[in-house]
Image 1 (tube, rainbow, N blue to C red):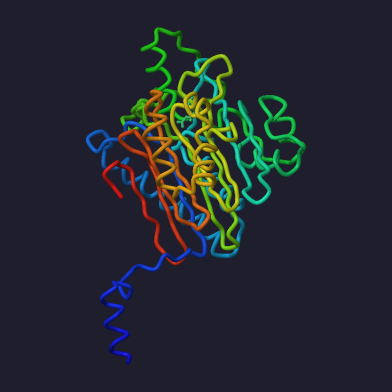
Image 2: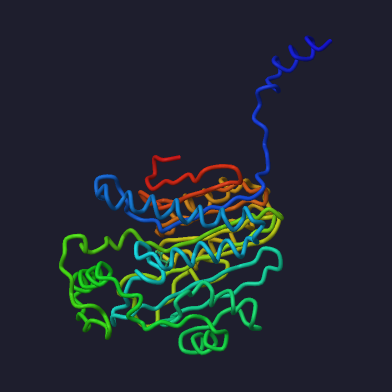
Length: 347
Ligand code: ASP
């Protein structure tokens, strides 16, 4: 009898069919999308990015392993990436045309669909924590500039001088961008270190974006998403991109999906990219990968925008989609090891 059953299982392929298992927890991370190609990225820089992404995934994994919430994991990972000068968020953010670092961030809780966002902050060390405080400790969703910073003070969040965010590579990137646009180069910010002309300070290619984002499903099955950025190099007039716009750069809804985006923010706002992806999953029952590809590869591309997203499905299945040559990215599930990728041809 047993033999008959075994043969039947083999014949139908059931015995070898992979089990669609829901991981206990799952996390996906991006560190920006853009023109990231093997020929351009020197081996040392590539190793540094891979190590930073591995570390970011591990940080999230440690929170989730201990039963930490999706929100805690999002905040812990983004705080870490905001402190890492490799990424365009917190320290290492790009400069405005006036030579300032104006930081944007947002976070969303899939359980309650509460959200918090900040734009144009210049002194709060961790904009992601300020976004979370807006969500949890204020009746609002979005605060900007001076007001946001006043609120940060009432919450006891760490404040740093604006020069804390300064990096030579981003400054050189600004100078190059302004020269190409025939715009004046502002004086170096107060408190910035003396110019450093060593070769490792070659300007960062600004087409590599560098925004950071995290999507999580925790062991309780709750979803959360967060995004943090310095925006685009040489931005002017108080320009704000998609990162702090809920529904554009960030979205989370339990039972549906969590999304964080990176790319040319104006297009992501116009398409409500993050919410559109979740709506497709919710209403058309598309899988995360299908929904992400439909919005990024078709809608965003048709409009002329570039960039990408990471998506976390309700069951912990993550997906990424981007229409640029590369996107810094990583994923980790309970019991696994971090999977890190940069180029388009990597899985
Ligand atoms: N989306 C960000 C913005 O437009 C930039 C980026 O992702 O690199 O501000």
